[in-house]
Length: 148
Ligand SMILES: CC(C)(COP(=O)(O)OP(=O)(O)OC[C@H]1O[C@@H](n2cnc3c(N)ncnc32)[C@H](O)[C@@H]1OP(=O)(O)O)[C@@H](O)C(=O)NCCC(=O)NCCS
Image (tube, rainbow, N blue to C red; front, side, top):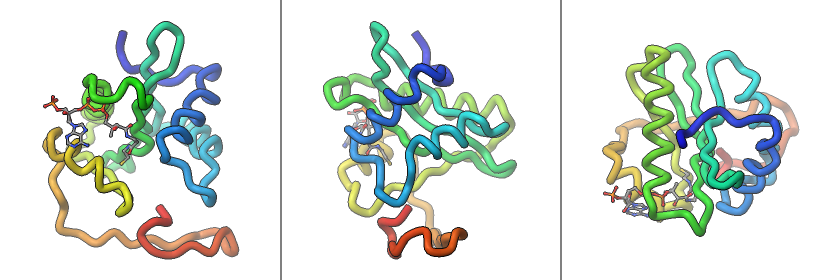
């Protein structure tokens, strides 16, 4: 079976996978983010199921210039069996089919354990500084690199 866009009945499972794998943050509503990605014209969330269970996801989209990947997650008991690579390759293919020439992603600074994974997949460290600004006033009080 291949990675494919989530079906509506998988949305709750995706959010619970993101929670289990530590990808959610109190200041982001994961279901909101999932719905925006699923409903937008240039984004989706890919999922991989086994025996009816959603065991891997990745959100992928492009901004007309570059592709971005978020919420890459593999169920803890299924990690280290090639699924992370499979999901990233599916994202890359999704982007290639839409004309993107480059894909990038952000790794939270407290998530150093995954750096080796991206090294293994050929993702290089970019010599850039990512800056961000919240656009909704009073949304939260978080600053710094953890507030992605
Ligand atoms: C990161 C994650 C998606 C990797 O998924 P996975 O299914 O375990 O990875 P794979 O089995 O596909 O590994 C692919 C390759 O990377 C290597 N690899 C995996 N994790 C690694 C690590 N932490 N350090 C070094 N190498 C690693 C594997 O050995 C494998 O190498 P190979 O293809 O040469 O044999 C998974 O650990 C995860 O869901 N983590 C929690 C959520 C998260 O942090 N997501 C990323 C947010 S930026």
